[in-house]
Length: 455
Picture (tube, rainbow, N blue to C red):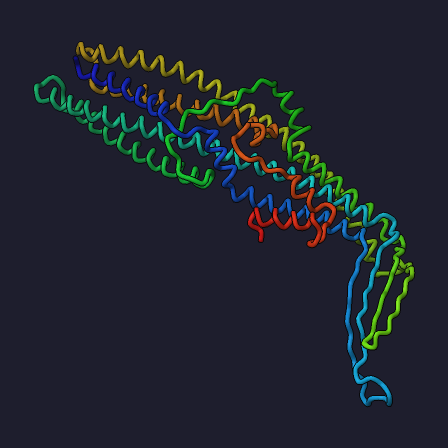
């Protein structure tokens, strides 16, 4: 068997090894997504922000309830009057409840609920970003690993070619030029291998940051099937993407803020009650109504109304800009996916053609009709074709998930990941009625906080 038959055998063996390594892999893309979802600090951060927004509803609800407070006072008078106590004072309980304020407090509750809904959608969008980053990191490690394997195999092959060229030079079959060509190609192959190893190291670092652990042997990943047209995807995204839903809830909250500001001049009616007992045991109680409202505050209320209106206008403009951005992102993602598909098809044809060409050049070289440089060039073209195919396959997978993200469906629930899904309503349902710490609901809330490490 000639040296060029050995080269062809090595190329085939390398491809087989890559395939066997993939089959023996122990970590799938779903595994990486599940681990990254559960280990993401960014998701934990935004879940905490959502709980803070939930507490905003509880704070607003508390304004609808009675406020009870206590105070104790003690005083002494100098000079002391005859027959008077040296220390006077007592304990006082005060209660107050707003009976009427034009609906401002209820509007505050409604506004906070809209902010909670907006924050929930923001959390979903963060989840999308986290999961898409994991997909990109996973596929980049796959790409870089296979590139390193190709370059390592290329170095081995060219080393064999160099040795064969040196042997043939010794017997006078080729010139020194052929040997020098092989030496130059070997140096170039080693340089490219070093570059790919550096790329792999960076890809692994990004994988660790995205997933939270070192990658194992990564299995091949399939693309997400895209069965909708570009127009259908745009329409779906404009209705369902978490960013557009977040913007809509922000507009609703801004509208409610304007309503509250318009009611700032409405008088407030409050029910007040006081119970007092002094140090001598004398008791007294009182109850009454108070009515009051602003007359003049230096233009502050008018300014607050204009500010609320400006923020409402900004939220509406942001909704329009967000819709434009979603349409653009969908178009870009869909175009990226179509290009990746076309590139993958073309790369497959390129590999087939380059393989045939390499075999032909090898046979001609065995017959003396081709030089070592011709074989090196044909081998390099085949290597480049294989590398292009690997890159195209990676791009196609990433592009399909990018389309999914542009639709707002890049979530653990939609991907059916094997994880405990986060329920954004669980904490809200515990706090929405502003429970006290001593109530059963408050104790349940304490247990929840302890479970998530907040106490």
